[in-house]
Image (tube, rainbow over all chains, first blue to last red; front, side, top):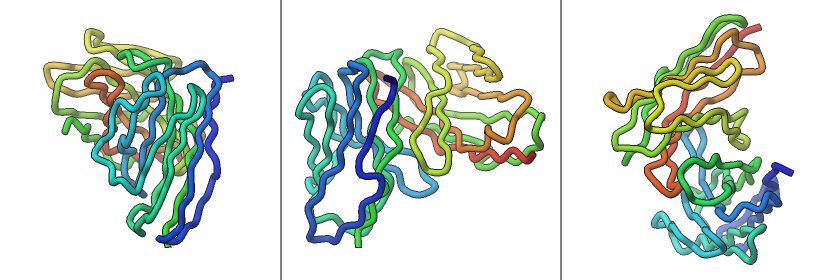
Length: 114
Length: 110
């Protein structure tokens, strides 16, 4: 199984809502990533988890809260988002954080904040 | 930032022609990768070239890397309509902290 799954595919939420994005992989990968991609722009790294521990937070606002409950799952909890947070949120995984491993991406969750 | 700049931003070619896209970056890297993205969906890894390699092939793909010029190119030979997508270079400065380039949108006309 070389697939990264993400749910939901689409999410519409108001600025006062709390929602969560979910990412799952069963490749035994020990590094997982969240990226944000605005329209017509490249993906931008948000968070990196390595062996279920947060390794990198790219100065992401606290209204985004990542969680890695186990080695297969990665969540992104959303609270009090702004309309400018509307984007495609991509999850990825790699064997680990050593340099020559490719990242496997999920299909993304398209988020719209009203 | 070591974000890569890619050119051209957009490229339209006829099926069967070759497509070349270029990537330039700013700081030293461990490796450079190329990814493809179809219509705002997930990215698919195409090829990885290490900083001590100069050229790599995978099927119809050929990647070159010139670390002295901090640049890379991706050549897709004998293009097909299914190659229509956005292509991103991605640099890894270490520990999988990957930075994506601005991307090239390729259209292959049947």
